[in-house]
Length: 312
Image (cartoon, rainbow, N blue to C red; front, side, top):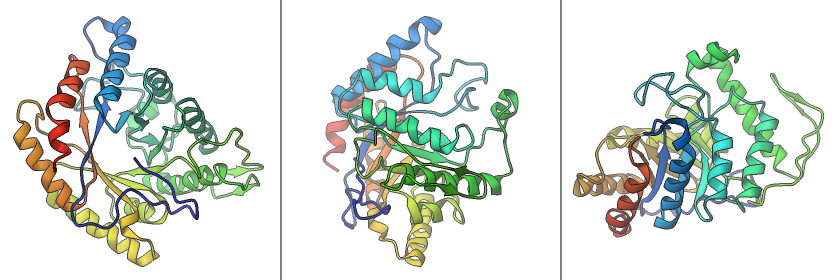
């Protein structure tokens, strides 16, 4: 699990600079299209989260979307608001780290986002992390009337959002003045249970902006994986940014989502892929759940695959 360094906003993860790391499993819950319709969503989500928590899964995430995304289902498929969903999950679990993979910076004012994540952290007894990204799904922005500025502006807003959240979670409750956001106070009471602040994970592999922001601010990077050569290249870029900024590369947890195989149908193939990820420095891999029977999938994964992952 990610942890923060009390000395600065450059936290330290569980990695200690070894060449090969153990790989933890995270579960991503991308779909609410279940047999039984809306009435089945709550019970299915609760059962899946409980199975993951009891089965030893490290982290459990939802998406931050209001319409379903291409590749998972049609836009009009069921989709819940992410942080409300995580609050529900927190009440049904006791151990796993919880967050969105990842929060779109355009959807919430940064100071209010800091309060939302603080609330999740307090009510989950210190299990929240902030996954954050520049947002990308234009259709739902336009449809729901959410401003969707150009990419360059979204990245500048992303950096200000990071700065605001860090200030909200610090001893500094004074003003903040940026290009886009001006706050008279950054008061946040109660403070998160996780000290000095909830861990920050940035999603995306953009080499000029995203990975530089990771090097400057984040506890973890989440890369869209599947191709270990691409992941290795992205981590090389991140290392160069860390060198430029004087940041310890090994203090950043390296994670990925996007494994395209079937860990239950081809467990040996999955574990072989995990071995290559571990050799590249990846310490956590997200597995996306099927939309049919996700709770039994998690139970089988925890029983059949997780013990063998621990041997990598």
